Length: 171
Image (cartoon, rainbow, N blue to C red; front, side, top):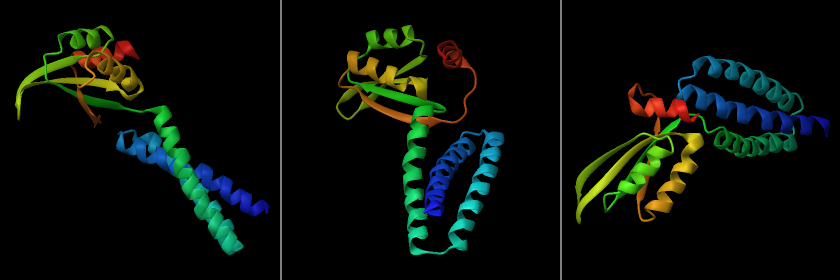
């Protein structure tokens, strides 16, 4: 029974580490990704060694179950850490002057555009936000432009501009 619990525990550690390693690699943080990859591999080899040493159906099921639960834990940890930035596009039918000012007053940089949609003129705001501040931005948009359409893109790299200055101030 002790081996089974150890397999489960190792999987509950291994998979979140795997998740974080992948995220760090995608975000360009290769040194952290390398360290996490080393830890991940050690846990993986150790857990797999236990499973293969005493190969039972229960051990294999617990290994797989631990992997699935580890994915849930890894996803939870990733959402809590909210590493990185998003480029958010806010699309509105009317010019959102008040929303633009409120967003700026809250430390975000905003660039606005006018375009032609199927049913007439539309407006788009581009806002770069740390993922940790996404909820603040969403709440502002919901309060001032409840019918707005939002799209968020993961931003891996950027340089200069007011947005960068605003991000440094707001963190």
